[in-house]
Figure 1 (cartoon, rainbow, N blue to C red):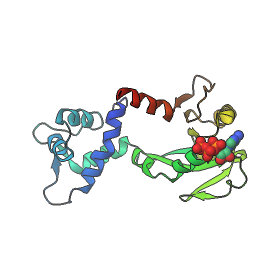
Figure 2 (figure 1 turned 90 degrees about the horizontal axis):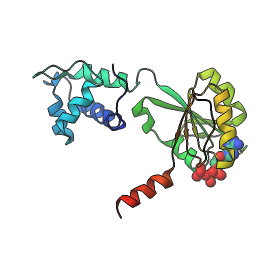
Figure 3 (figure 1 turned 60 degrees about the vertical axis):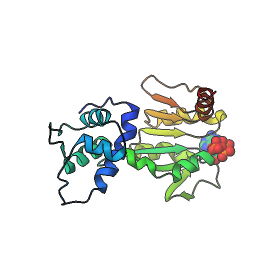
Length: 206
Ligand code: ATP
């Protein structure tokens, strides 16, 4: 199935999934059309049809999708069968909030653990997720085959943490520190700067 979908489509897929799962079973809901989903969720039906076609081949003209098959296809696309493990380095306010957030599961992601250099934080748990010393990061990632890391340490520690992540086999990093990280080309870095996002939003409204 095509994997290069837009972020907008990715954002809508859990919505479709939640709606399909909420439908009563065995009461005539064997098939469902993109139009019916669009109407129920107040979305554009052309958009819904395109979204569904990018993750499922099951759609038939005039019949729509077999509901259970579509649930399976969207779930598979979002990685429900095989959740991707993610770790967080820096368990301050932001790191804690991310560890406590359960919404990543909707996108097939599983936050496995947090790591911090502060001895008072390491050894604790947040939302049932363990927090370890940063010295244990490498061994943990190797053992659990973790490929995605989130950096929520201060700017001054971000490059050091990035280097540790890279040496641990991590190939994708979401960086919340306001600093340009240097990493091998094979590592994807996504910088998240909420201040910039907010500033752009405020400009749009001026
Ligand atoms: P934020 O709101 O950005 O999370 P904060 O004020 O809670 O910030 P920061 O000073 O930004 O805290 O630090 C975030 C966390 O990163 C802290 O828990 C701190 O102990 C941890 N930290 C700092 N340096 C390192 C490092 N080199 N390795 C691991 N953790 C670190």
